[in-house]
Image (cartoon, rainbow, N blue to C red; front, side, top):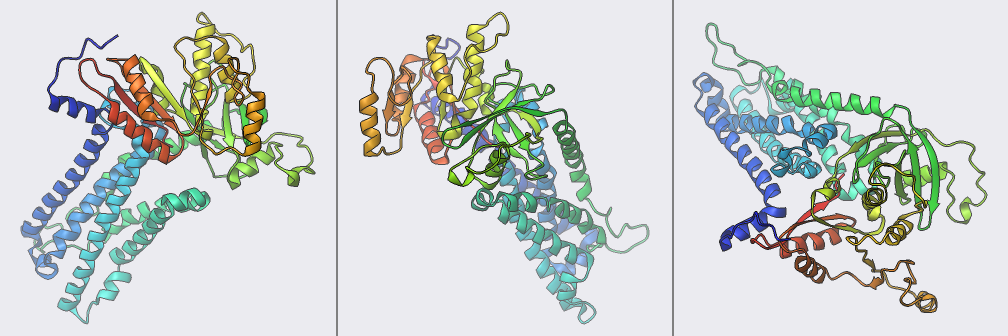
Length: 517
């Protein structure tokens, strides 16, 4: 049914509202943040450039004084927000409020990276300005003080060097190529934040910039200020880390392990204190494998089940070691591995909210999963099954869900009229595989590849055709499009959502949501 709440709009307003569906909030938020930094720097620069009580030091440092201090103030501002972006419990709570309409909480990691690059820029400005300041001090006070001594031997210079090196290592190890290939390096190097923030707390405590001397004058102008900016976010983050540790160590045990084809392992975990919603994710730690490593996995269990489950694609060092500890065997090299006698202890942190959690807020929803990216939608589809088959209460599943194909087959058996399944095989088939499909094809009954009544399509999906059809079938309503999978495919779906969104009175709007953790 068309959305009668929409009014007839001008072309400009339609284009603006189309842009606001997926692009506007995040771009406006980041733009306002950058503008706020520039304004704060200009204000700080003018104040320090004209402050009468700094005329003495300004005569020596010249323009380097307001430039360095203005940049330092903006660094303080960014550092005040940086830790909030990784307070997952706070963000999961806030994303369920009206603020989520204006602040893209699901983009918290992206904003975390934006803030980090802002700190990189202002650090460059701050450091270069201070190197000029050191040279100016050397010109005025040589041989009493030299630029080298100010850079390395006095308090501000030494702490500044330590802060810069720590931050450089954190940033470079967090680059996507390094993070994905060498996660352990990223994980442990990122904990240099303790040295980074500790150095910042001391950096301004040495009274390098002094006010003009006089009776009753505070030469250090109130002393260090960074702690005033940082204390609230630091307290929230400390509480967050304590909560994660306490919650992670509550009663938890593995109840079932299933090894699926294609190196996918299903792990079912009993944790009575863990209350979940469809589309959420958890962090998993196995101390026997790595004491301090927590890895994110989307939940594949429904809130109606008495366990939480994840499906793990065995691809890296940690997942391989974890799967083998669970008793899984891959290839001939593991054939002689003795059977396990016990399952390892695991810890769970979470659950946390994600974009897929909003799936039931839309009149229509499109779930797109590629490869192991189908995992967030297993939880959602199981929940749909429960709601359809047991509207008055909980029931046990009549058929065990081996993995996603079995889940889809079970849903097909229920003949849910509002659920459509489209499967695409994008990889090239070998000749013997093609022959096998032809031989096993049961035309009109079941697909030869999936066993579903819904056919398998070969090649990449034509999203323009798909979205055109959705727009025609669901005129005048909002459709949630949720994706989990490779970045390249995400870009294609994101563009299609923007292209086919129509904010006119009878148009269809496609709201795009992607898994981010």
